[in-house]
Image 1: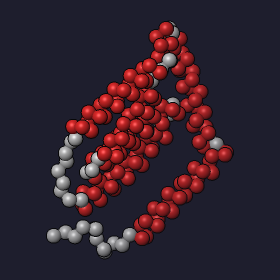
Image 2: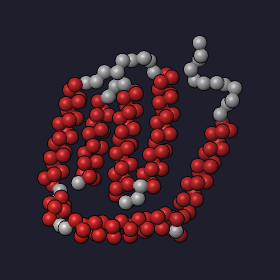
Image 3: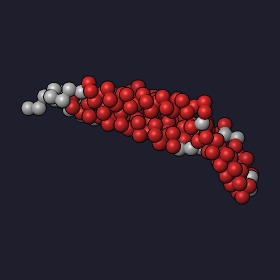
Image 4: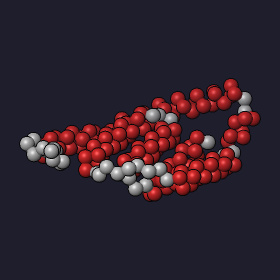
Length: 174
């Protein structure tokens, strides 16, 4: 149920993203969509560490984009389109109704005992959580983790060496 709602929110923000004009509104829409994707990936793996790291990486990139856009973009007025707002509300309402109709597990959850449901969720959570953390750092995938760490270290060193200290910022101060 929650995953279907997050899918519908991701689709809605994608449609809204194509209709935006202002660069800061595009950045805000991208940030909201990043939050939804991170929530969805955390719910799919039952482990939020990967989604937390993904969100922090996207947030760092968004900060760089925000600084770049605010230093170069003109001072345009931010207008909210009524038509776009109504369209996104209609799509959200339609997706919510569709997910309620198509979700058969919500009907069975009401029929199942609450104690039985909590025991089933707890057992599946512990087994999936422990397996996913072991898979990340064990034999076949530990090489990928070490490769990513080395890549990030080399990228950091190269960026520091390429940066020219005395050239200054992109925008000229007046």
